[in-house]
Image 1 (cartoon, rainbow, N blue to C red):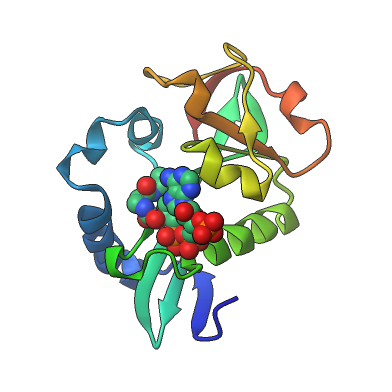
Image 2 (cartoon, helix red, strand yellow):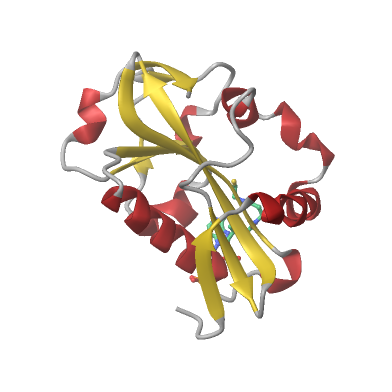
Length: 165
Ligand SMILES: CC(C)(COP(=O)(O)OP(=O)(O)OC[C@H]1O[C@@H](n2cnc3c(N)ncnc32)[C@H](O)[C@@H]1OP(=O)(O)O)[C@@H](O)C(=O)NCCC(=O)NCCS
């Protein structure tokens, strides 16, 4: 872990900095994405969200939203993950994601879902969800729908439509 990095749960007082980071990292088109549709009408942050700070300044943020998949609890949606554009490639994203996954496993979650690039996320153990197994409320490129089992065999137990809690 980069020695100057502190990772901790997100607090309400971090939200302005997080939204400003999202504007810089993703731009105005971000609300059109299907992952945003899943999170509509959910709390702005949950106890599972994490921020990464250097000398108290936010450098990266990760949101986790609890889901039901065809009624079953125990899954989280990961995203967005954003790293300050000036601070990319320093290991902040990798460190933040690894720590957030470790904490989610300790909290008893069995599966983490995300929409993203397999070449980046496979290093954390994400794999493609078999096409048609898990349905989001909007179009998703099936090659970008990824899952990480926190418990062996968990992916095969989750099938059907996703609703955020
Ligand atoms: C993607 C992102 C979270 C990565 O965080 P980061 O702190 O820059 O990345 P790290 O320093 O941990 O890791 C860098 C490595 O990831 C690789 N990488 C970064 N983005 C990648 C991508 N989309 N696909 C494949 N590899 C990627 C880099 O090439 C580098 O590889 P290396 O370790 O072999 O040198 C960050 O760049 C970001 O915020 N991007 C814009 C927003 C975004 O796309 N978020 C993800 C979708 S929700």
